[in-house]
Length: 425
Image (tube, rainbow, N blue to C red; front, side, top):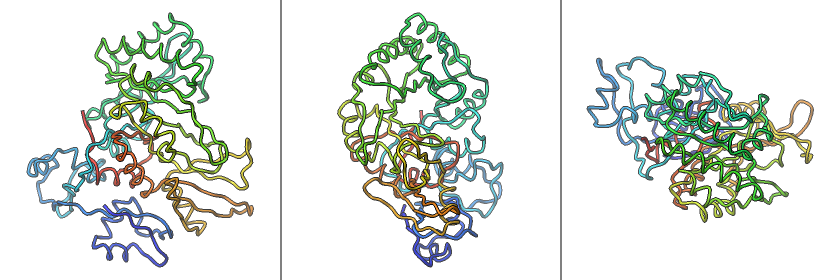
């Protein structure tokens, strides 16, 4: 796997020719349109399969997998466009294997229960566990949700991916409901009701595990959370269900300095089966125009590693970019989220040049809108993902979490899949 940064005058044809790959492969791998103009500074991932196969009449995925002694799941990972295909076509070339010898990787992916089925099927081969957002807890120990998750759980099972029910305390408007959190944490009787209701849903729906997602843990209230989590774990472990945590590390910004809550992660690790550290960036954020990820905050990453066993750590790999208007006004300015394809479209339409900051592992560009206002866009590209994975590997961390998988991020999965073996149950 190589990452190429587009230069002035490059075309898809010239890049493909320079690397000795087909235009079709370059386009398919990177999820781009052959007719699109390339953006200077844009990344393209160049793959070099170690084994390919040309489909013959009568071939099926099963017969090809058997002939090469590889899992069908490997063929789906290496050829994601097959996810929504019923047939193979004679003459087309399938990738059988890559030289992905960087070891195994545990991959969590967050999704809402209404995720598009084609995106779900393209993504599941790359996931160890699917974290499904469908239920929110109430202050009385009940849950509000629907049955959209049933088909998602069933589909995940077909792709050898476990399903985890995510517990949150959001209101109907999507805000964190602090009243619900307080009611649950301070009342052991409500906790008992919640745990039994949770167990009933897990069994009825066929979930494999539970993920308890928290955002407002502080050093002052952490003992309440720990007591609650321990109760949940004891009850669910007795029934054979693992209990994982997703914890927002409580990051705040002071200029370019990053501060975070120094929680007792060793205790959170003790009462759970693993922790995903994730900052939950939504459709807009109100923070300075600097990208944040745990991987690019060495003090935070060092602290986590000092507290939690490596095999229990999952670290976020952000997938969303953000567009800030300039000048930034603290407490007022908000940045709007963009997925990777939208970022490239915006850069193309504004005739921007993409740059890369190696310190914070992020790509960026600036442009001026129709109102003559300046903007800066920060986002993650193939360089960011590759550098993040290499940094995590240097720590010995073998688990990542993706927030979120509601759109298909071609370059993310290409960088992961060409270098690592995805863990499956």
